[in-house]
Length: 109
Image (cartoon, rainbow, N blue to C red; front, side, top):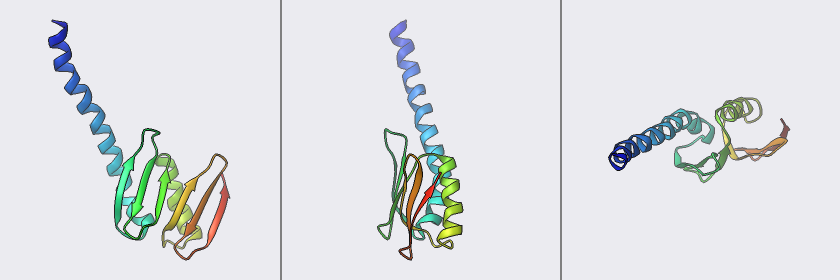
């Protein structure tokens, strides 16, 4: 009985996990497109939970979570005038990013 139960539950468990990743990916894609200022070439989530985005124009950024992505959108508007990032990295105490116009910033958290 236990092997039969595990055969039934394993696919359900795997399907549930993949749905949550897909749902999170959908939440990030639209805003990622805005932050790229171009099409998104590659989009992935690593084992560390970070979202990695490589844009069609070869710019890239790492996103820790949904809150970081929302803050990135604010930084893009305030510092990059909505043009997007060439590079964006979140450090332990600050954000480091370069706008499309090559201006670089280190903003404390």
